[in-house]
Image (cartoon, rainbow, N blue to C red; front, top):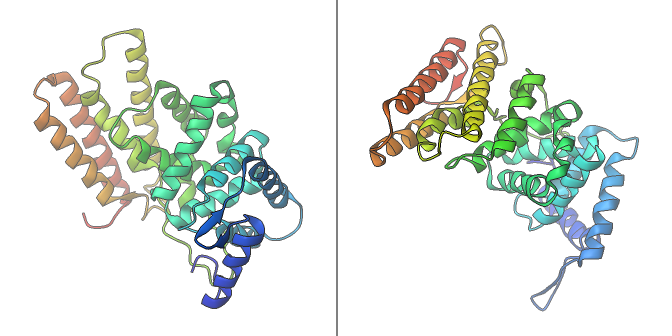
Length: 307
């Protein structure tokens, strides 16, 4: 379905890719996996291939989806390819990755795993390279929006680091249309390809802002925690602005999933019931942000699914 190929032809295609591109040879139940130097060479070849001129975006996306199908074990190679593409500003690879994330679902385990790999590369292994991430919304907005949706899932049950909050705030502030990009951009798919329903980052980021006051009760009142409060407040206001802009927009019907809001409410309810030491100020701020989010989304009529 993803690549619009008949079944047997697709199987043959995947077998050829497995053996001659990735060197995955099955012999007597032993798998000959690519070694590090071969993997590096392969990533370089793939990077150059997608960046080479000529060919349509639909063909490149079809090839990318075939190279990294949903049940593939090649996520390390994919993660390294995407990290290299960010560092070298390889727009073609990033655009194809954005389509890959949308087709598999930007909240799927595969997309979340890729986002985790990127964050580890740029926030843990090479933190001085974070500036490369700041350019992403301009370089590849569709990829960035899907990446942001996946990042929202990584921190579903915990607070993100301050550096990431700062980056997300800058992304949205400097690129107001970023949150709505998945609704606007039509993925370039091969003939017969079925575009999957896009998922915006809005619900996941609202969850961050709504739950942050009741998750931060143990943090001392330092400059560090004050900065986090300001960042959450900034992101909340930016989210509200984006949602309200959808009010007269024909592309607004699938902006926020009702199930995502419901999941946030369930998490909030469980947190309030399990933590009896939450002060009234934090609780009131959480409820206020939840009310703002639901009210704005209902006003813009951008919630889909069972309400």
